[in-house]
Length: 221
Ligand SMILES: *Cc1c(COP(=O)(O)O)cnc(C)c1O
Image 1: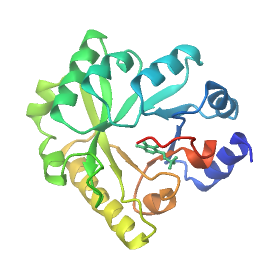
Image 2: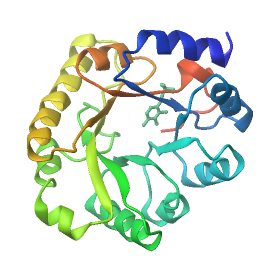
Image 3: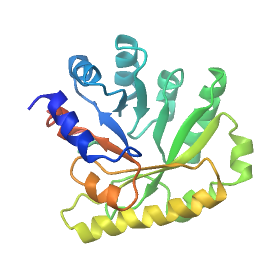
Image 4: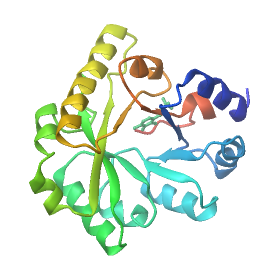
């Protein structure tokens, strides 16, 4: 099936309030254009230089999200234009995003990545630390960063009980955080193989790659 057909099937299953991030990492610009022409505007990439190059080449009304692990020395490449960074997993990274946002006269929206999986390879703050970050002190220290939600990746498992519980735990944390910060609105969880479950547990942003663009030729994290 074509990219446009895949997109339309997925979009028909999503409620209006759920934002679809089309994860185009490793895919050529021609694939992105195909999705763009089918109406998709929000795309996610996980390599800073690849994102910078695609941003330069592709239509300027594309809304670019960064979704993968971000090294501090790469923030500068995406700071001029990135719309949302899903993957803040350390205070050091928050500090660097703030610095680069400031030098670009911007405030960059970010999500705090929370570790919810049973896999050590996945990144993120513990629930306690994620919540502890949402204080006036953080906002004062990093005025050019706006923390607007949480992102989480569940265990790569077919066991819906495990995955469902992980999503549920992040939704609970999200609800707590919303009480602390009124513009805390985004809960990014769910990928190709688990997004319906993520949405049923409260996700309002899903990051879908292979179900739109087909399998990737090489694995990326
Ligand atoms: C690659 C990636 C996705 C999309 O994965 P698919 O299984 O292809 O849908 C979502 N989120 C993150 C953080 C990713 O790195």
